Length: 246
Image (cartoon, rainbow, N blue to C red):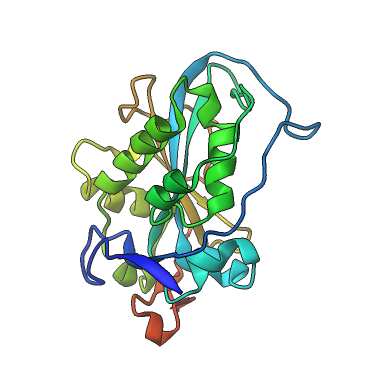
């Protein structure tokens, strides 16, 4: 059973993040996320922020059967870009994380944000690891991140997926051109080991305004060739597939 169907944009719209999104009537359970030896608590000053968005057609290519990806990759839903999270960056090479003990997010908070970040457990993770370091309440933290995400606009990703000369730099330029006030120097592109587009990270200053990314802050070199999994907006057509782009 599905409820609260939210259409965030028509399939052909350049600014659409979700082609179709239905929040389950019964939410999947979430569990606490805490610091551990591999991911210790770090109480560090904030030097800026990263807004990370995921190219879902590629994510679902490798995670379609994962239980945690059921909303994002199944259930008749179809996404283009989804919000991974808003991450405080440090002043140096390390960043603050797990700054305070985090309670489980209430169902109302999860429901409000599942069509931006379509995983209840990922929402819990983002709040526990990153949100607790911002000084914001959970609702204020997600309102800030989803608000920035919702204002982003995108180039024609279906067209770009078929271009054979796509690079990280040309993709950053196309995304910047679709968003007045954002420059390519504020964008980092990440890819998997096979060169498929994974995520885009937007660099923000302490006031969460777009700013030039610091050297060595992640992402591939702008000259790196990028392959883009082709979106298929209609759930009836099978979600998304890796096209012949790149």
